[in-house]
Structures are given as C-alpha cells and as structure tokens.
Image (cartoon, rainbow, N blue to C red; front, side, top):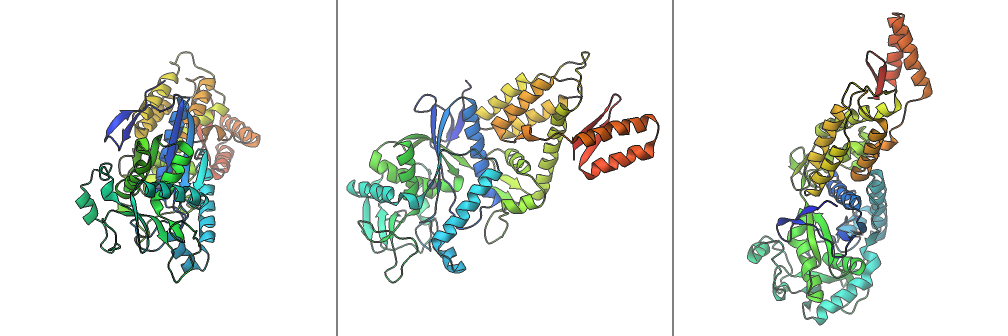
Length: 467
Ligand SMILES: [Zn+2]
C-alpha cells in the first residue's frame, strides 16, 4: 500500500494520511448552496475531490463520503447579514424557496452524473436535518457558548479559545475584515448565528419552530450537525474550497468542538480558486460559465475533467475555452492510441515492447503525493507517445485503460469501435490505392472524415482514429 500524503490546512504541512479506523476513510465535503446553477469553478472542486476518493479506493480503503446540500440558511453575505439566498431568488422569480431548492438540487445531481463523479454514500440536505441542528444548538447552549439577541441565537466566539487558530488570522484582523453592517447587538464581530428568527411581520417559505422561536438554522450549523451525525464526532477528512477557511470551516470547528471537545476532522483539504480569462469568477462579472454552456460548445465531460486535472488543486487554476481546446486535443491523442485495440496489431518482435507497469506505479505515486495530477497526465502522455502500432500487447493496454478509468474516471473503456461498414471501406481504399485509383481512394477518405474518422497510412496498413 502506498503512503498517501496530503496538504493539511490544520497543520499547514503535508501530512502522511492515516485514517482513524484501519481500512476505512470517513470524509465530508461541503456541497453547493442550491439557489442558482453551479459555475465551472464550483465543479473544479468536486472533480478534484472525486480524484481523492478514487485514489483512496485504489488503495482498498472503504469510503464513507457525505456531501451536504445547503437548501436553507446561507445568507447573501457569508456572515449573518443579508437575505437568505434561496428566499431572495424565490421572491425574484415568484416561486417558493422549496421550488428553487428542488430545481437547482436536481440540476446539480444530474450534472454530477454527467461528469461521472463517484456517487457519495449520501447527499444530505440541510432541510432534512432541522431537528439534528436544533439538538446540536441545544448542546452548545447547555455548554454556555450561545446567547440570544433580537434576530437569533449566536455563538460567542470569545469563549472558544482557539477560534482564530484554524484560519491563522489574527482575530482583530479577521474581525475588521468583516462587513460593517453587522448586528450591533452581537457581543463580538466574529460571533455567528446558530439559529435566525423569522421576521416578525413576514412568513418565510422555510421556517421551523425551535426552543428559541420560529426561524431557520444558520449556514454553518448544518455541516457540524450532519457530518457528526453520519461520520461521528471526529472523522478523517473534511474538504471544501479555500474561501471556506476563514469563516465557514472556522465556525464549524468552533461549534463542534464546543460540544465534543475533540477535533472535528484530522485532515482539512482545500481547493484553490479558479479564474476565468484571468479574472476571479464572480456574479457581477458574469464570467461564471455553466457546465451545460461548455458542453454545448462541443466539449465533452472528459475534456473538462482533463482540463481540471491539468492544474494542481492547490494552485490557482486558469480556465479558458482556448485552454480547454488544448485539453480536448490531448484527449484525442490518447484516444488515437486506445482505438488501436480495435485494429490489427501484430507484435513486432524486433521492437522493445511497451512496459505498462512502471507508469501505473508512477501514476499512483504522483497521486499519493498530494494529488499531483499534472504529473500524472504527463506520465500518461509519455506512455501513449511510446505506443507505436506494433510495440504493445493489447491485453496490457486494455488493463491500463481500465486502470486509468478507475483512477481518473475518464471512461476510456467505453470508446467505441467503428462500424463494419467503415472497416470494409478502409480495406476497399487500400485496394484502390494498390490500383493507383487515387480518386476513389480519396472519396473514401473524405467520406470517413465527414464521420470524424481520420486515417494514418503506414506501410503495412491504414490505421483509423477519431477526430
Ligand atoms: Zn460546510
């Protein structure tokens, strides 16, 4: 078994991964707030998590993977001010918050399939776990960490000594960076809502009774309540984006540890930001490309997956359609070698035979080294470049393709053969060429090109590939 090393935000160093229970990894991922379509930057995070899961599975770990769906409580400001994102969208589109949640959850789950992401053990919704959240707030209250003001129940961060430890921000610095329009009744600027009250004059679409009054849970409490419910008070890995570090994950740790007095997770893995055409993705710039838009432009999910893996998860990734075209071409160059499996390939004993075992080992080692996906792709390029028409054993190439599918999720095994009719045409073309009937031979080439099939003429035969 290979030692897996992961950069751990908790220790600010690359740590050897050791799960709490031998052979089992418990992992929690912060999922989307379902008030809008996800943009390409959001999908980067999930593709990267998928690779982590696939690596762990390759090392024979059993996985318990929980991903939450935030369908209530996330306010327009990540602090506790502003409107509920779902309620705001509902009002703007004359729907209910429940309809908004259903629609965007469905869209998220469909695209999860489209991208061939590993199915987690469970997707969990905040609205399905209201009583768990109320129970956790009750426990926080009984430990003396909460207080009630006019608009909700808050966590008193000054009572949790290590509050600023995780983000490594000076607390004053963290507080002054927060917005000025906070509730002035809060005891400390960093205090956050555990439960918010519904407005007195208005009924919300989503609201529940609680020991403190009718309202809804704060954004952070759902992740503590649901992760601990399914994975226990301390689990192995917690993942999210780096923007979660200073507020959301800091608050998750505070409210969980206030009750359990033990770490929430041992490894915290964070993906860096993604820029589109050199700019940070933001609503106001309107550069948050949707997955569907990219696929509509003729790219496949494999192109997108490959493109995401071309940058390291801790580096700031640059997305652009031009770069995606390069990834698309890279994927085609791999395909060109894989479809040789469908073609007559006698092993030429005078050439050295390609060795697939060493690259397999290298790929695992690169992934185990804090998910070094750029080097993984380079290794695959080098291997495919070595493959000539007659220097590999088809059974070994087939095994390698299955291995790549398991570890990177490309579904390369499902690349189809061409039809018998087209195969016959290729033979017919060779005959025309032998007869020096170039006009007829070229007609066949053009016909195949129109079906996105290219031909490479070698002395012994013509090999086809997809364009
Ligand atoms: Zn979360």
